[in-house]
Length: 474
Image (cartoon, rainbow, N blue to C red; front, side):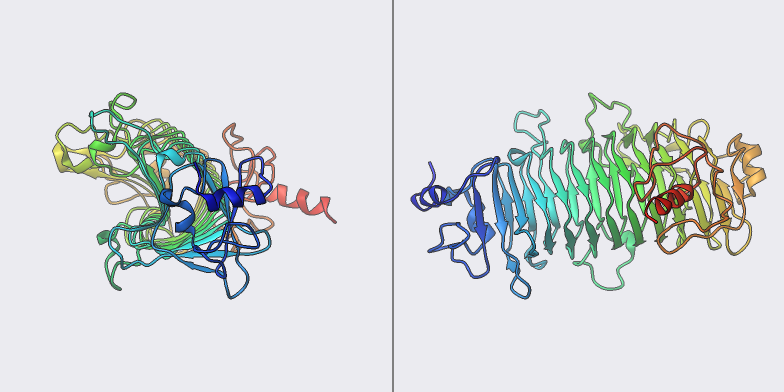
């Protein structure tokens, strides 16, 4: 049963369709408040603490967020039952957590809190993560469990975490991350720490399937903007703007310790299965703009990649995974990819590359055909380079687009020509990318949610839809 204070508060409130609504305000009191809008509590941690017996599944916690009086200094906020955590309409609340308290996160969502929603909040800090989706993957009986699933994180500003901004752990399935600004990961690392010595993604998903990441602005991450790996299935990453990543922009798969794979579903140790990356603008990465690692049946379509791979790799990159050098791990090559209608603008960096490693007897970044065609390439410093490091390839040192076509039997309808886009990724009138793409069942709209018309334009923007959209509103 709820406490006396909580029961009195509940009687004073009008229940919503989801349960009771509890108010928190910087001018409230945990001692004398009852959670009503006129007598709010002071801290989110007080409301969610099970010892206080306040919230139940389906309740809403609404934070008042008036200008200049909207910051809630918390150490950890832990959701143990399904809840909605949000700002009051017309206001903007900020949950701020320290980064110097070891092994803490700002908001943790437990498996029993599956179905929770974070909406219209600013969340900053956390020594490890700003938002952490927990799992009971390791059960005492040795069986694999489940994770915090059916979670929605929307319309929020998430930043300043010690490591990853959003951390998703095994079996945290059906997570939706939409319309957020996500930035400034890796705050615990001293200035000057090389990216390869950091672990601080914008979104880090290890074996969480059916994740949807859409319409976000992800920028200035210490390492990769977003990746999904560890056997994650059926993930969609679409219509995002990803800029200034310390490592890669988007990675379909990467490199996961073997204990995080579900070998019943994925005995071959694929890092990502049937992932779709479409209609994204990726700009300014130190390594791959879009990378594939041990992926199976990935779709990489209608993305715009600009100024990627400043320190290594390529704008579109087929990488290899080591999986901790574990003798039992699979480390498969990428296979079955569909890489279409992508617009790449580089500056003296490779446009496409396939890796090969001598480790463990030889590891290849690709098995079979690259699956790439109808792409548009341009290097502002000269001709694009296309690299295939596999043994016996004539492109170990790089080659031209015709050489790439001939050696790999791919990109027969791709083009290399001067290209430009606006700062927001839109195509200019007369662009060579207009109407040069392939019409794809996997892509229906563009980065602005405007419906594409056949023949598709190459890249994240559909210029013909821009014109139609403008004419409809003149």
